[in-house]
Length: 425
Image 1: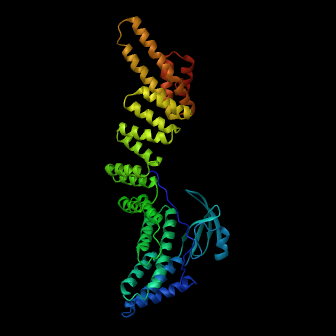
Image 2: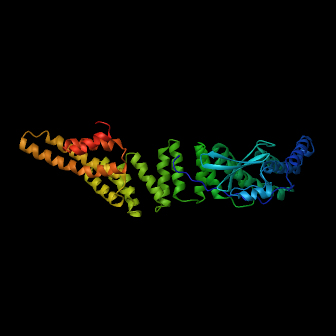
Image 3: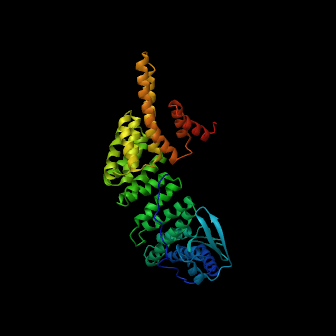
């Protein structure tokens, strides 16, 4: 997938922390043990309160080591709630240097003085939130009279935030499959009639986004199309859906969703650029040029659009139009390597074609005229290729082309210099 983004949630804690309030591993383990006994009891196992209690206990199991933590929390706040760590150290990660505060049951990670994650070293249960969800669902099935409705609503509100917190932490650790499962549960919780808040469209989007990162493309489409139908987002959402279709090998649907995105957001250049690239890759130059013209109208001073237009004109055999587009791109950005290189190659190829024609001329005088005309065109390629070489001195194709030009045009000093750069002295 190419260009994903995520709107990360900042989890500041939850409306209902715990019915027990004071959480310690020992107290939570005792409550869980009593709950295990109750669900084995025939009469108590049929009481919905037993299962609501059990769901809340598993929520406390999740919270017991992290009850005071939230993403973005300042370094000093941790010490206020959890005291001084047993040890402090730093570690190197893909995102940079992390400070680690080591406690008995948990290591807490900081970047730039703010909380970015944690690792629980001692846990009571490996998947407490999933167990909490199942227990609460059992309570719903048993609670025919609705006596547990208020407690279920509070538990579901808290559970939604907990699943999001878990998902964000897993996402930050690049555990995308786990993050997707957690986000998926958070959507299930939010879809429950016992969840009283309006469902957050960004939650659904993030679920689809992380599903794509996890390689679950069919699942990703389910959530991304759902949030599209809720009028969420902008053209970037359509680009993401397109990329997902591409991963599934469905180019027809990829084209269709881009067209839909363009109709909905005609001023969004993200969609326009994707349409241009889609048709370029599909060898449909005419369609690509049409959408590129629209993109240029929106951003007339974008050198990349003029460069892409020139490349398309080259592809369909219109070198004069290609040169015109490249020239405008260079005016806008003289240090744009690709356009300088391409402009030089356009003149070079034109001269080669002229030399091929000249070689067919039998009259010596006419041959020399044609040859000299070709050499004049060759000379026009040199400034562009030399500029490309200045921009990217290590680009071998540029150096080789310049070497040939210097040789053909008898530019001995420059030829010697280029041979030295190429290691051919």
